Amino acid sequence: MTGRPTERVRAWRALMHVHSAVTTAIDEILRKEVGIPGSWYEALVEIAFAGGTMRMNEFAEETTLTKSGATRFVDRLVAFGLVERHTCPTDRRAYQLALTPKGREVQRAADPHVLRVIDEEFGSHVSDHEATVILEALSRTRMETVTI
Image 1 (cartoon, rainbow, N blue to C red):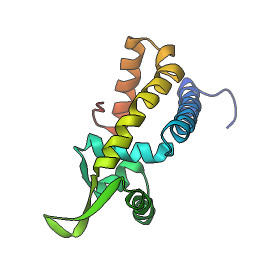
Image 2: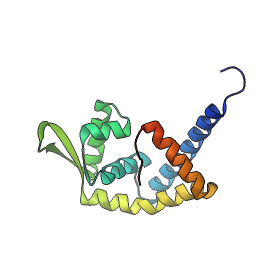
Image 3: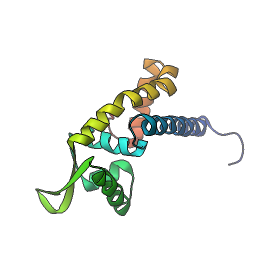
Image 4: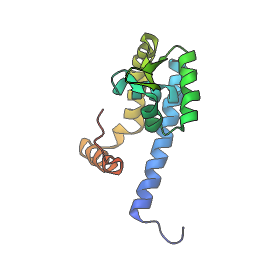
């Protein structure tokens, strides 16, 4: 890149730096306090946000994993007893993921740690208005409404 970066490039770089710092901090606290990596928590939350069950292909899309990568990742969650894989009742060729009671318990135990890190590393540095602007801008890039 030549010349001075545009504000949009600078904003993108700042977003990447904040994302890296927050996800690293989340991973560290979850490994220490809950015994799982941050990526496992992210997977549990995606399934929880989907109502506790999610089709495998939707999971792969939400986590940006390849189909084979998502399968291997889910295999680890199944082996740890956090997720179950079932044949989809409406499409016998597809699989549906469901949180196990242990998976819900682990996700809920991790929530306060994650929320604390998000607040310390990100939320405490932005106003509510700024958070709304950031959310609206990022939602437009995904062309959907992001809700938590």
